Length: 579
Image 1 (cartoon, rainbow, N blue to C red):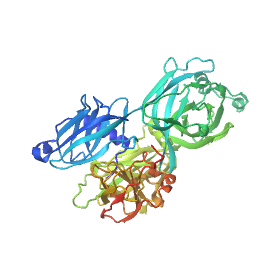
Image 2: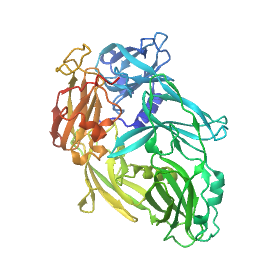
Image 3: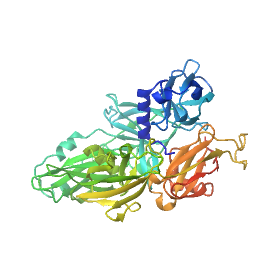
Image 4: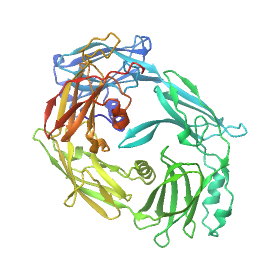
C-alpha cells in the first residue's frame, strides 16, 4: 500500500466532505445489509477518558474507485456509529478544533487503518484526542512599540531525499498590537522565527532604475535594519534553540527586534535580450519564504539589502523576453557583503513525452488516472518550490488519455520524474525512464533550454508484501503487555538499498490495521529492509542517522517484478525513555 502524502490527504478529506454521509456509491448501495459493516466507537480526551462531543469522524476508502466515504459526529457521550459500510480498507480520521489525534504512545497520528469485511461489526473502538499546543506572544521594536505584519513561523526539521528540510507547522502575522497566536500544534520539538515586515525605505532606495556610479553602492554605509530572528533572539539559525511543546501547552514567545547593520548582495545580470529587464528575488532555504527583492538597474547591476546571514537561493526572472528566461543560484551569506555575483538567465525548457503502460492483465491501464511529479535532484528543491510559487510552474503534470504529458518553462537544472502517489493505482511503479536511447532512471536528466523528450514505461506489476506485525517475544517491553499479540497502528516501512535512499519514490509505507495486518504494494524490483515500529515520528526513516539506531532490527527482502510475499514482522517498541 502506498501511503497518502499530506496534500493527497487533504484532497481525500475534501472528497469525503462532498461525498460524505451514510450513502455509499450505487454499487455498494445495492449490496445486501448483511454484506455491509458497522463501526461503533468513542472519542475521548487523553490523558483521562473524558468524552469529546462534536468530533467529526471521517471514514475514507483507501481506494476511492472501489470504496465509499462516511462521516459522523460524536454525541455528548463521545460516541459515534456508522452503518451500511461497504467492505474494504479505510482510513479513519477524527477532527475537533483544539485537539490532535494521538496513538497509544501519545504521538501525533494522521488517522488509523481499518479493514472491514462483509457483515463485520467493530464495537468499542476508542480514539484518543490530545489538547493541541499553542504558541503566542508579541513582537515589538527596540522602543517597545508593537510591530504589526511581522511573520511568525513555527518550524520543524524533516529529512527527505538526502537533505534536511525545514517544514512549516504553523504561521501567523502579528496584528496592530504586535500580537500573534498559532494554535493546533501537535506535541513535539519546534523552532520559532520572526521575519520583520518589509523595510519600504530600503525597497524604495534599491528599486530605482537610474544609472549609478560603479562605486556608489560600495561607498554607502550599510543601513541598520530589522532581520529574521530565531527564538531565543538570535539571528543565526544555527544558534536557534528548539522549543519542546507538550499537549495543551500555551507557550509564550515574545520577540524584541533591534535594527543592526545588515549585509548586502551586489551583482549583475548578464546576457539579457535587448530591451529586457530582470527582477531579482532572494529566498531563504530555511524558511521557504521570499524575503527580499530588487530591480535591475539600467546598466544591469542590482543590489539586495537587509540580508541576514544564512543560506539562500537567488532567482532572476527576465521581463519582456520572447520566451521565459531565468537564473538560479544557491548562495551562503556569512559575515560579509557579497560582491560581484553574476546571474546569467537561460531560457526555460520544456519536458514532454509519452507514458506507456504495461498492464498485468488485471489492472486497469488508464493513463488519465496517472499524475507525474517532476523533482529537482540538484539538492535545491526549495528553490524549485519558490519558482513554482512565483512563476506558476507546476511540478505536477496530469497524463492525458493518449499517454502524453508536458511541463513548460522548466528552470535549467537536473531532474527526475516519479509517479505521484495515487490510491487509485497502488500497484504501479515507473519501470523505465529514458531520453532517446539512454536510460536515466537512476541518473536523472538535465534541462537547459529547448525540449527534453522522455519515454516513460509504467508497470502494474509492482511487487507486494503483506504480513502481520506482532509484539516481540524478547521481553523488551516492560509494561505487562501480552507478547505475540497483533500490533494495530504500527508503521511499516520498506527502505531501499543504500544507492536508492535519495529517491523518495523507492520507499513504501503502510500502517497496520486493527488486526496488525499490513500491505505494501507497487514496490519496484530490488533489495529492501522492512522495519515495523510501534510508533514513529513522521517519516523519520528517510534519515540515515535514524536508521542507524535500528541497525539489525529490520528484515532484509529482495523482490522481483510481480512477486507476492508474506512476511511476518516483530514490532520495534517505543524506547522506555520516550513518551
